[in-house]
Image 1: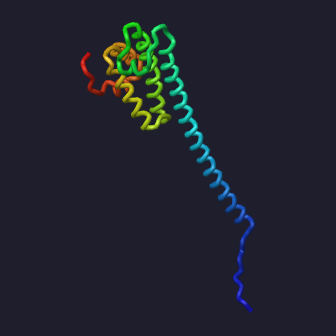
Image 2 (image 1 turned 120 degrees about the vertical axis):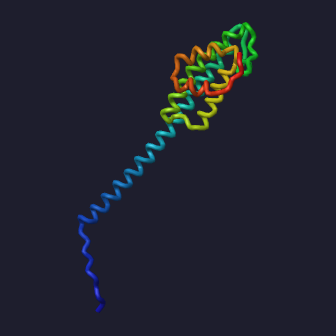
Image 3 (image 1 turned 135 degrees about the vertical axis):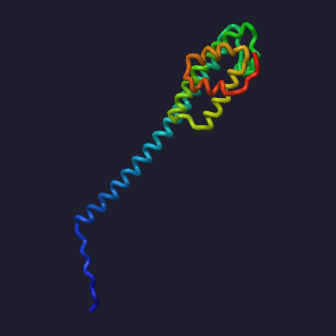
Length: 156
């Protein structure tokens, strides 16, 4: 005769164990769904920013004296094209203020934000648009102004 060890497994114990496993599985699933939603939100925000920038750049082709984006950011616009650059500068500052808010909310990753800060400082550094930039910054978040102005610029 072989000795048998009595095993007492209750139905309630098994049901509780399976219930705990089910809850843990559900929490893992919800966590993965939240992560996926965050990634989708980040991608959507980046696409919206890109679309806005493409629209701004596209406005350089409309007038009688078209220009290109490189002329604007390297300050090679003619006098007739200056208003194109001025309008683009205002639009960019509105976009940058929105970017700052999205960065504060965690919707822009650090790599993209670093590029945005460089672009803001570049725009502020263009002497022909300095007064426009200063005016636009008076309407923006003080933290954004601090980020932009915390840099050494040449005198205009």
